[in-house]
Length: 245
Image 1 (cartoon, rainbow, N blue to C red):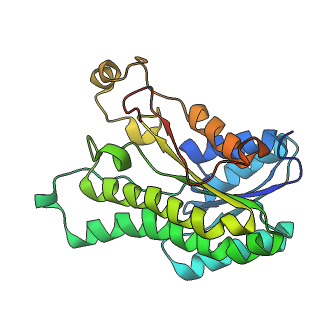
Image 2: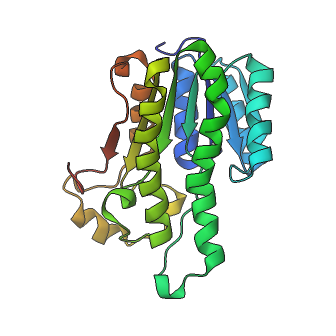
């Protein structure tokens, strides 16, 4: 129980990677606030968290909207009294060439993926600073490391921004004892990747297979636990060897 009685807020926690993260942290003792734009999905995951004996609350929130982020964090603190761990997982995917990309599509992806990470992080800072402890874990992407392969340039740019935001925030919060780290998943077997040419992708992955949501959740658990207390500003690549640094 590495996270016994800790409180974790996970955005985009209603499915895919977020769902795996919520359940993994709960099994290690954390109470979970599940933020998601789809309340039914968040409520479903909250039920699963409660089945493993932890407390949970489902909250509908669009992380690109400042007022909804404020309400999300306020509801979490109202329910549990504090926040110890923030996982900025909420994100949307887009593919397609720049020549066919509208300003609206560009803005939407950047607003959710990058601005959402900023808004959620900023909103939890007063609580974490007061405690002089805490963990912020941002979910980026392989695309943010190497540019879009199957992803559009707006998605890749948003995730590259998350990686650099992580480093900047880590420097800002280090004096308060707060760790800020990032995970950059490669091709993970989720609903988002169902339409990808899977057999071709497997051939490009040195380990020869797609990742599982649990692989990413395990990385989040490491950064959320005291095992990573001397690591901050780091990006952990979980991609089967496609990109090595």
